[in-house]
Image (cartoon, rainbow, N blue to C red; front, side):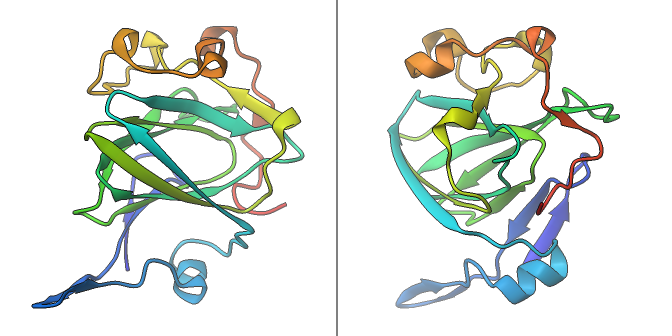
Length: 191
């Protein structure tokens, strides 16, 4: 696995070594030993999967303390634009984002540590999206930032006004109206 650092500390793109032959391909999608060595020790406790159609946008989500989550995400069918926004008060990159295309063809994964809001837009007809989390889901800790916030400068490759959003995602505040529960001193990985 190759680790590609991004312009925001903590956000990394993982590129597996894919072995192809006449039968198809094989790659190791996750190795705790290699992840801990090359990224940071993280103990994942829950795997999730979603299926969405073209034009669906999900996010920008996070879990409030004490139920914060790091996520390791990938698209196993189709393709998505995956985005993480730094929402740590006092961070020099507060409000900045990293966007990466994840697809069944590039097999890339994106590691999103605690203190970031996360979302994605479906660019293919259908996308199956998987993510590992280092904390269990707690609905009472749900939080979010509006996916349609122009101040974030995200090119979703889909017009947010034409996107398919959940009722919950339509109600998230803009970054300027948001009081982040995170600060720069948050442990990005484990508590």
